[in-house]
Length: 114
Image (cartoon, rainbow, N blue to C red; front, side, top):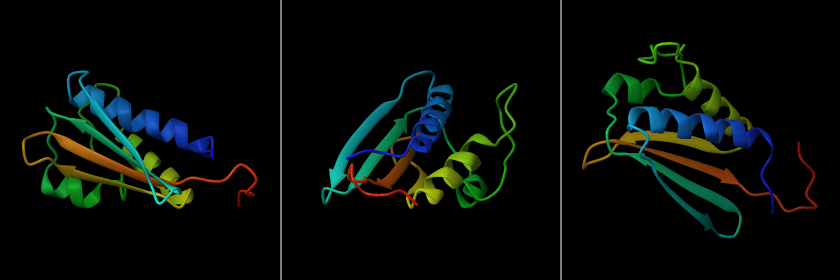
């Protein structure tokens, strides 16, 4: 099984955002569901998103708190995962912090890409 090469830059973007918000401390969880779906959880214990940010995450560009940020990273990652028939969801964790979940189908080595 393999993942499309576009996946990696989108994943790194989400990891980088989580590390920035979480003071460089990120928890990463992975599993494979039904032998065909990669499930990735990225948790930073420091961040927090407003209800408006959660509602718009991945749908529109948002203001970034990064000094050089343009607020495009999550938007581009969301578009990439969608293009790959996957998904990105964000939520505030009940114990504090932000939890990102990525789900992406795995491809068999001999399957054609679209």
